[in-house]
Figure 1 (cartoon, rainbow, N blue to C red):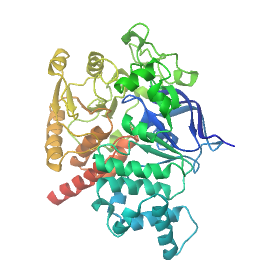
Figure 2: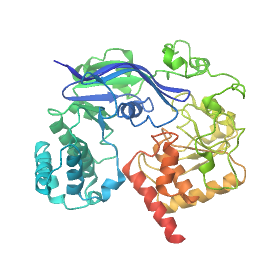
Figure 3: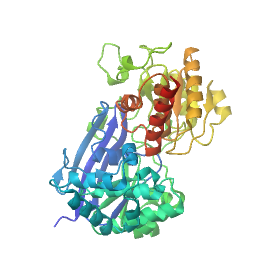
Figure 4: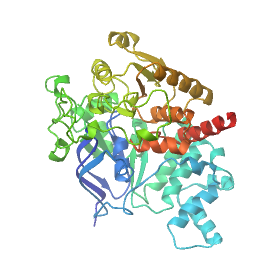
Amino acid sequence: MVQHVLHAEGFGVAFGERVILAELSFDVPATGITLLMGPSGTGKSTLVRALAGLSQANRRYREWGHVTLADQALREGHRPALVVQNPRALSARVGDFLADRCRQASSPLSPDKLREQVQALLDAYGCADLVPFLQDPTIRLPVGLQRCVAILGELATRPTLLMLDEPTSTLSDADCRRVSTLLSHIAPHVPVLMVTHNQRQARELGQCIILIAGGRVQAAQSAATFFTAPANDVAAQFVRTGSCCVAAPDAPIEALSEGFAPPPLPPEARTLVPDSGVLPSAPPPLDEASPAMEASPQDDDLPHTQQQADPYAQPEYRGPRGFRWILQGRLGTAPLPGAVLGIDLDLVALKTVGVTMLITLTRGDLPQTKLAEHGLRNLHLPIYDREAPSVHQLRMLAIRMTRLLEQGEVLCVHCRAGLGRTGTVVAGWLIHQGMAADAALQRLRDIDKEYVQSIPQEAFLHELETSFRRRV
């Protein structure tokens, strides 16, 4: 009898030259809730998206190692289900959305049979409180119930393994309890792999804990022993502080203290980075075919601006970890400087690729003295994690960004991870330049599928497009 539903052996992920996950080996039990934990920015979301097959379309995406689901290799149509946030589902009525998801998992059914299946779904997972809302658009529900509807939508397709990425993030305590109650009803029936940073929730719900840091599994224990008897010093530090000091898998060796160097990368990963984590001091010759030297995809499709892409721009690999060009040599994105390596190293790397001005979207501002030391400046628009600015704020910021670009500034937009709030603002700028919301999202996700990470952010972009059209 299979004791695990998913087995990973030496699984790794890179985007271009950047290795996010070096080699992960772990099992997900065939029952209960397995929690994926680790410091911010260590690739937990990358892992679940890769397992769900959501990263394969990215031309920079590479993976290696082996993963099986129910003892069969992953393939199209045989993958874990990840609860993704679909803004279009918000406008659908709850009953219609769940019926549509049930229809996808069954042979053709009559409307009466579909209604019976929806009711059975609600009964099976303790969601009778959704019955009064079946005729209402999902967007009118309390946020906690919106999350429950999204989870039920995936359950309706009868997944072998259900994956969730921070399903209670930004929720109130009451909404968090409602989602946790649903998860407790799911656990006896469908195995769950869930990303969370909430240790209290992990203690209450988790059967097993997998701790990821530095692109590797640092600990895999039962939830009870993980919190009371951590397997090693790294796990103990995480339990105590919520983070741990482990170098990223491709961190430059010269930037690390003695004894903190990560283990060597596996052979597959070493073919994707210049020198096993030590970045070269000079780019490859121009006549060599190098992905790092290629312009970002579809640069010619960007709306016309007075400042066009710079074909002689420094390649992305000279920037900080996670740096991406959106408009080559003119507009880029990155995680928070100092989030992984020291802030000075990240600011030096940003200067190296030519950045002159940062657009800071985290709630806290960057230290101005550090920016001044490196000849950099920034604009600060604080936005809550996984949320969006107001239409007015975005419009004013987009105007300012365009003027800065016209004045010759090289911009880098960042939040914490450089994906959610960052992608929302950059997509908003593209919409301000004349792109449709869907085209702007596709433009960014051709570079990285993880840009724009929440329902409110995607819904905001469509609202922004509508607002601009009204003004035309």
